[in-house]
Amino acid sequence: MIFSYMKERISWIILFLALQLTTLIVGYIDMTIPMESIYYIIFIQFIIGITFFIVRYRKETKFYKELMEWKPEIDLIDMPEGDTLFSRVVTNALEDQSQIYREEYNQLQLDVRREKDDLLVWIHEVKTPLTTMQLMLERVEDKELRSQLSYEWLRIHLLLDQQLHQRRIPFMKNDLYIENVDLESIINEEIRTLRSWCMQKGIGFQIELNITQLLSDAKWLHFILRQLITNAVKYSEKNDIMIRSLIMNNQNILYISDKGRGISAKDLPRIFEKGFTSTKEHFDQSSSGMGLYLAKQAADSLGIKIEVSSEWNRGTCFQLIFPKKNDLLHITSM
Image 1 (cartoon, rainbow, N blue to C red):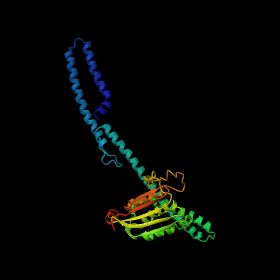
Image 2: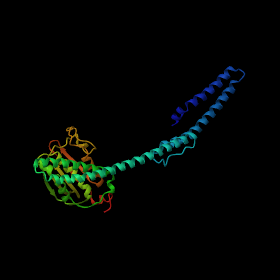
Image 3: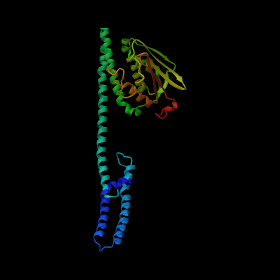
Image 4: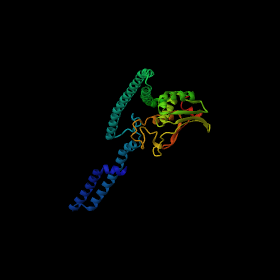
């Protein structure tokens, strides 16, 4: 700080030294003035100058030191108050700027909330004609055409569902209800939703559930399993998907494994990143890179740990490790 202050006041220092040099030159030119008096005057002025510099340094840098230690906040609650004219100018300018930012921030929050609400309303409105379309598809006599249309309908349904939950995840903790959920019924319901797609790809399911009841939020567990099962179906072809549950180390664990495309070792650490698809299949237009990201976000809020192991062209296994009952207490009360 001392060197910064000296650099800031370099013009004052130069002026002070220039005045001392002028006094010395006048003493050499005017022989009537004893040099001892000149040296004495310069010494006194030097002492006064140093004292003045120290006093001003302490007074002027106090505000800036406090400002450097201050942690910026929108409301400027703990911002130090200046005791000089220029420091008060700085404080007033920051307060005015902070007021502008607060107003813009509040307006942006309002706009984002309105946009979210509008999108949620739109998604719910779109679901109505989708339901009607599903009923109409059942009356299509051409089986191949019905299968193709059902697949496209399912894609739209899953994308809308993903978008709906993406908007809800930031507020997910306000929407949790932990209870005993029936794992078997949740899995069966998700498989039924994907039935037409699975039949088209020749995919079956092997289900071995040693645990059928566990503590979680049914709605969000539906969403997590939907993303993982959909991911397994998407990258599998004419193979069975294994779903099994068991207890290990006093924890409930659910495995979802497939024998599909798999994930390369280079991509494995990044699969839960937002928007990440693949480096090997970079031009895969069917992947949005959002499903696993959203599943991980939802799982984290529920205290569920997701682990994955995979080998390219050998398949993938997702492992869901559910929290113990005591670990759920910090999420919400029963």
